[in-house]
Image (cartoon, rainbow, N blue to C red):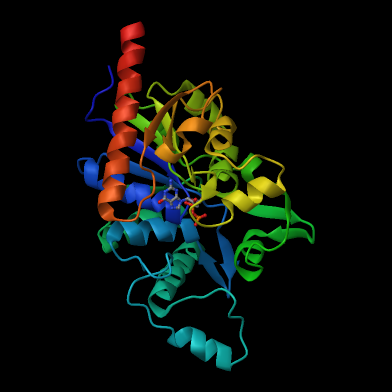
Length: 322
Ligand code: GDP
């Protein structure tokens, strides 16, 4: 019997996922949320180890995120960038002064031999983040994008080239040798796991890297708790970012149902927007409809509740059928 007091495990990329993670953090009792972050976007730049999705989650859950940019820290200043530019340095990846401290400290501690997990846990504690943020792996995984201009490192494609090149294929270098983060795997198998929520993140570049880590797919399939995904596509469009553009370039229909199909065999339920009611037939999973556009904090909380209620209902049905 899975307890309603159990732990919820969310899988997330950056901005879209962090919005739902914030909602979940408001709905769940303290200590009951763990968020697994994609680290395929991580890269080394200006000698620094940068983990964009971990940082977006960390700042969002600490209430330190920058609502204007959607990334980085609130109240940011840009003295470092301006000084770097004056020296002729590389400025295509914007690093605010406060944000820079995170990367400097992470880089120092990684070089001293600490794991990304341990560093993230400590930074979260210092910034007052309640939920646990778990990197998908402490081993190095790097998303690479095959485009009509050749293979690009992820941030070259995403930030430097602003997703302009046409995507042909994605690869997650290092994934096949990576070990899943130990707590991530332990939670998937934990008797008190209440639900797994796949956040409305880009399926190709935020969720697929997590699923590419060995044992993760199998652990999700075996998991006794319900696995529910929330659609990142609303009314046939992405809210932001290149999800829809990538689907078109990869020859896929741009629809909420197509994202659900990508998670076939892994999920028990899918939360789609009311706008997509007419476009969800033929799926092998149960579908629930909700308002999935998260503009306000209340929207984030309401969607988190809807996803959890759906997961609990799926679990009740499963128990009743046994
Ligand atoms: P990234 O790391 O910035 O790409 O962030 P994610 O991968 O977490 O999120 C990108 C996806 O989130 C896009 O497909 C967006 O459509 C989706 N997204 C962003 N905001 C929302 C929202 O409010 N509701 C829903 N349902 N999806 C959203």
